[in-house]
Amino acid sequence: GFRIDTYAYCDQEFMANWNRRMLEEFPELGIFGETWVHGPGIQSWFTTGLRNDLHDSYLPGVTDFQLYYAMQEALSTEQGWTSGVARLYYELAQDYLYEDAYRNVVFLDNHALSRIFGNLERDVTKMKSALTMLMTMRGIPMLYYGTELGMTGSGGAFGEGGRRDFPGGWSRDRENKFKEKDRTEEE
Image 1 (cartoon, rainbow, N blue to C red):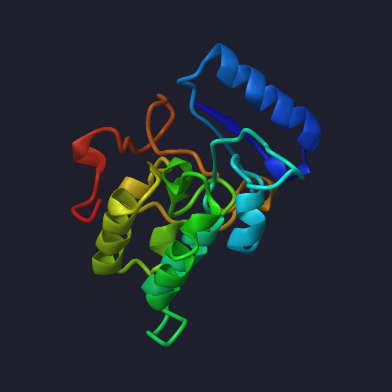
Image 2 (cartoon, rainbow, N blue to C red):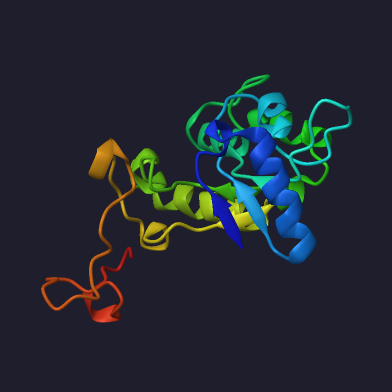
């Protein structure tokens, strides 16, 4: 697969041509663009299959920030007519805007966001629900390193939330979370 960072800032005509040519040469290549935008109409504009003569990006999928926001709300906000878990319904009901919403990448956190476990106030039951949603939701699940162990954090390099070293793998690390003996019961 190939992830294109900050896709919304790229020259869209150039990227459409690049995507088209890459898929001609490598038809099975997975390509998705990071589109940190607000609203499914805006997000879907960046994907292929727009049914008008204005633009076809040839981009199969995007990072599904709309579903990210909806999952965050479903896990942390009381149910209302359009809020809480109902937000998931309203986002999924707009999947018709995509040629194939199953090609979008679904996630709970990443290098630029606060870690999900911290957002859920270290609630293990909610974390299990979050991981269940991630793995069973339509789309391609992306599990960011350390999420499976309940890493938390909201600072980091460049002010990005999740960009933190994973404990272990280097001789200078005091803990090695790759090894069961260094993981807590919760982890």
